[in-house]
Image 1: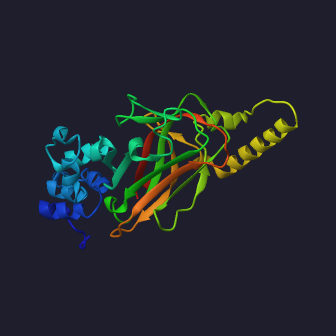
Image 2: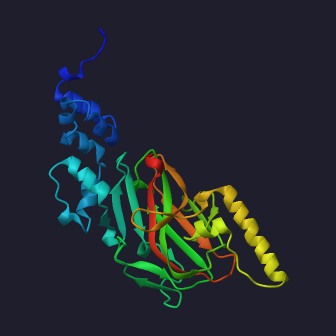
Image 3: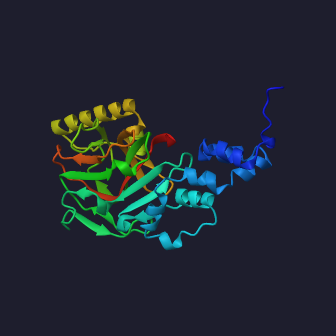
Length: 299
């Protein structure tokens, strides 16, 4: 075809400039097209543009800064994708979403506001080998569950739809979460709060939901209780599994709290809430690692 463009005759710098206008995912795919594309796709100039503009200040303030030694900007990019670094004194972690290069954060439990967190009767702070942070919060037992987290929106990637996730796992003997939902929301602090919804923190919901396991007690009260459980199970089936936690590759559980689109430029505090304060029943046996804020579906 007379109008076809032969990219092989283009200077490598020109090809590199074209690739830098795509995405990290596209650049990696296009590097398989030809040796010219492969050479251009290794350029530091490309991967410099894929890295956040403030990546140097983020790395310099990280506890992991001395160990971050990379031979190229591409290696640095994938280092930040595959191995989150601890920032803000170890109370947050930072990484990049691999396909897009968007910023991801996890707020450690110590960075969250947890009601009664410093009362040993209700909560205690321990170390777990599979947590990325030095401490996690263990819920001993409360009748008022309230967890809040905040992050400045200016630290996020612009024009990105984010979602927040509570990262947790059940301890042996976890109780009180089987059929009692918690209320979650995400929104700008001091502004319009995001739409709240209910989710379940029952990590064993799949088996319990499948077999509709319910307490066995006698009397009118128990028949009423069983009816409530049955209705809740039916509603949960219709609502879908997004109201229940899923297991991550790192062994922890996550449940989505809500979404937020950050246009860019404006400054504010994104607030994430997890609450169960209406039922008055006791619940316990959870480990809280933190709240993750990451691009939803890589967008």
